[in-house]
Image (cartoon, rainbow, N blue to C red; front, top):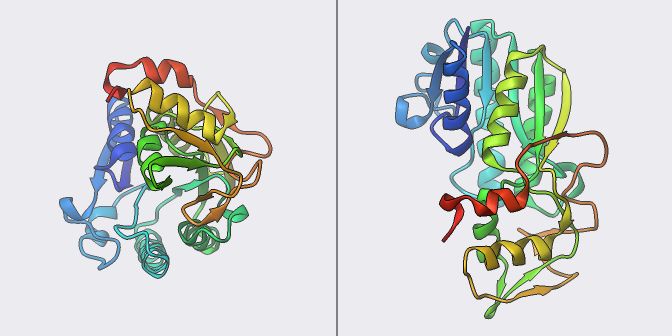
Length: 251
């Protein structure tokens, strides 16, 4: 089966591509670097020709509210047109748990717009909403600095390892379209501030983490359950402590 991965050279894309190739599928890792651009349309028709499945793992180069919205809307429309012409049978889009519960976050609003385009496309689809990746915890801490301390909400957090995300994305891509949304998350849930504090300690980062109920997450208000699945979810197999013990995750 031919499977095109938009954003196939990124963190999740490269891992997903490896899994699917090992299973014997013809995988195209599509990105501007490989001549496929969902914004300009360059290479899109040629790249999608003969594809049965498209996995959209694309990400905006800018997180500014207007720019990220334009990215996902333009990319979504161009993909919809190319997929319809190619006869794609399953569109898989990776989104974020809580996108529809944190309207103050411009990136989350843009992902909601992307999801709506996917659902209205007429192409069979599955949207995978994931919690944040464990690999991004350092960046989250950096973005949450106030003076010399890291201010984090005590709202619940349930990060997932990138390896688990890729495994689930590959599995979903090979299954029948859901024409709906599934949530995925890591196996461990704890207050956001505690997760970040554990991460910083494990990597030898001396920064202090302050429990701050007013702290925002990239502009979004964090309630107790804003960033975790509210119902059934597919859970990864990699526990947080296990992930922290891996040598490559040490600073």
